[in-house]
Image (cartoon, rainbow, N blue to C red; front, side, top):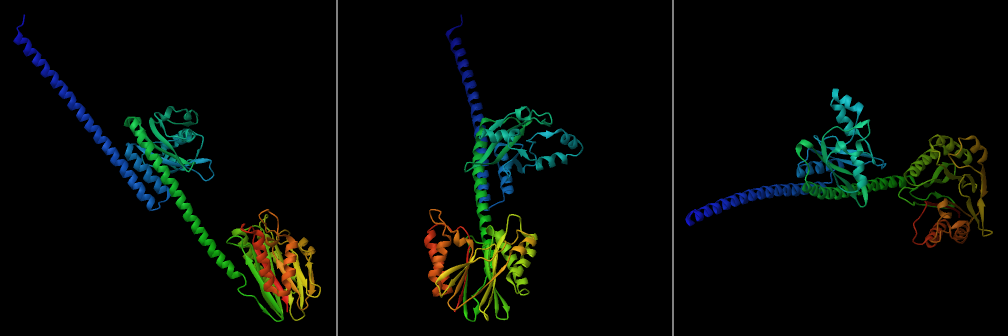
Amino acid sequence: MPDLLTILLTLCVLVILAFGLALQNQRRKVKAARRKFNELEGEEHRMFTFLHDLGLAIENDPSLSLLSRIIVDGIEKVVSARGGAIYFINSDGNYLTPSYLSERCPPLIGIPVEIRKKAERDPRALESHLRLSRVPLDEGILGHCLSAREPIHVEDIKNHPAFRDAFTRYTDNVSALLSPLRHANKDLGVLVVARHREDGPFTANDFAVFRSAAEQSSFAIGNARIHREAHEKRAIEGELKNAREVQRILLPQENPVVSGYRISGTNLPARIISGDYYDYIDLGEEKIGIAIADVSGKGVPAGLMMAMCRSVLRSVAISHPSPSVVLAAVNRQLFPDIREDMFISMAYSILNYKTNTLTLSRAGHEPALLFRRKTGEVELLRSPGLALGIDSGMVFERVTRDEEVTLDSGDCVLFYTDGVKEALDDSEEEFGMDRICESFRSAAPLGAEAVLERIQAELKQFTGEGPQMDDITLVAIEKC
């Protein structure tokens, strides 16, 4: 039997060996922990760098393509991916189109067989196909990610159910992390980063980091879009205001001075650009042409048509003594350029202030109102006529006729557009012809300016705080 000393020595050796093994194991754990710490520290540093670069980019108001590149290249570095891409939903909401594909990004969509064959001869065919592709929202892993509405990890794209179509193959050994891009409950697109299988799999930590980066990217892209849309809206509003200033110059800058008469007009646009207009044309020989018109529709198209109408009217008015002949000439020139869904109602009259006669013709316009001082009554001047732009000429010229009235001292004529009659109150009741006639009858004895002021005041009182729904134009002629 071994003696006690031998046993003790053996035990000591065993203890020392066990301690050494434990110490060696602990050192390995410390090294592994330090390595893991360094990896996490490096990952954290890359993540902070990505967020910092993203913040700087947003401050500089980048284009969406540049912001996409910053996001993809940044997340590639954070999770050590081979490549990545951002696909945005197109304006029609039917397809995903690439905003940015990194240089080494593996294909993320199925490749048709014919493209594969072309790429064998010319690699540019594959690159061109990937950059020009449009992916339906419900197809491929991109569509699958959108429908999932949350980040996903596809470990093997090739065997994903989305690529079972025999004509659209996926042959690469690729894994990917995908996330839908959403902002304000609206789908914007899909963010993807990918690795070849030889690069090693994405870890659970890679997926968690990617998810966080994708959330920040969605926020950045959404805000960039809002900022850009606001900028574009301001630019458009500025251009419209400039257009409105040009249009304002086309309207009379002051009321004409006519012997024995007071003439007053105003235009109140419902939007920045008006589809209404009025004009005074000096015809010589103690005559003045007075026009008022309303282009169907509102906004820029109506404003452009108004400018064309004014130009054509001025070019033909001097040559014709009859308002209906003038309107016929205007209609023939404008008809080829008026869209099928547009027309122009116009009243054109010629005031002869030597003979005190007003010759009027209406092209589908509201009837003018005539206040007779002697009777205190209001008459409607309903000369027949067809709106401009509805007929090329034959029917228009057969229907449209002149009407002549003689004006006595104190008489007053009012022209107006349908924005006056059709103005609505809170109960959606129209201002209507009865109110127009009554306002006109009350104010006409006070003169042309008083007529315009009274009707505008009563319209404002009638509509209250509601928005002006249509352009309003008024022209009053008073025989002194």
